[in-house]
Every structure is written in C-alpha cells, then in structure tokens.
Image (cartoon, rainbow, N blue to C red; front, side, top):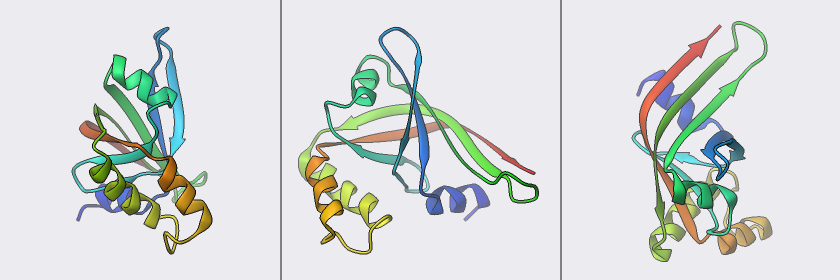
Length: 133
C-alpha cells in the first residue's frame, strides 16, 4: 500500500467541502473511512452537506497533520459524491466508520451516532494532491 493510502486509512478527520445554494464553499470536518478506492462518510439526510451534494455532487476534501517539519503531511483531492440511501447498506458502512473511532458499537455515543445515520456519502476521488515537509 502506498503512503497516501496508508495515511488516508489511519487518519481520523477529513475536511469535506461542498458548494452551497449561493455557490459558496461549505467546509465540514467529518469522520470517515477510506477503502483504498472510495471515501465513505456517514451523515443524515437533513444535513447541509447532503442538501449541497443533491444540487452539485462535485466535492473536495483535505486530510493533513503536523505543524513542524519534517512531520507535515497532507492529502487533498476532488471527486464525485454519491448518496447511499439504502438503509441496510448505509448502516453496514456506518458501523465500519464508527469502529474506527470507538472500540465497540455498544458505546452510548456510538449507538446514538449509528441511530442518527440514515445515509452515506460515497466519494469517488478523481484527483489527489500530496504534500510533505
């Protein structure tokens, strides 16, 4: 596995950028999982990011760490977002995302987040840019 993919699989926060109805960027920090080909983000259908994607499914994203060299590394990219609404599939992916952040899905917060997740944003990256210093 290349360094970029390993980095995306291990980091915790992705900043997702969608475009709102007034054509302004809307940036949101999100929990996510990366399959090596696609990025998955759990959310609910009433969120602003879903409303934005329904109107324009072109998104950008950024994951980065470090403030001092040589520990600065980041990946940004752009891609096409699809919304997965099928509940069984959305819940299966949401569980994978949550297990990246919680030891168990029996945790009270994990249960609440899983209950609140009724869709998944699937991003198919079209381009990546990587930097390190």
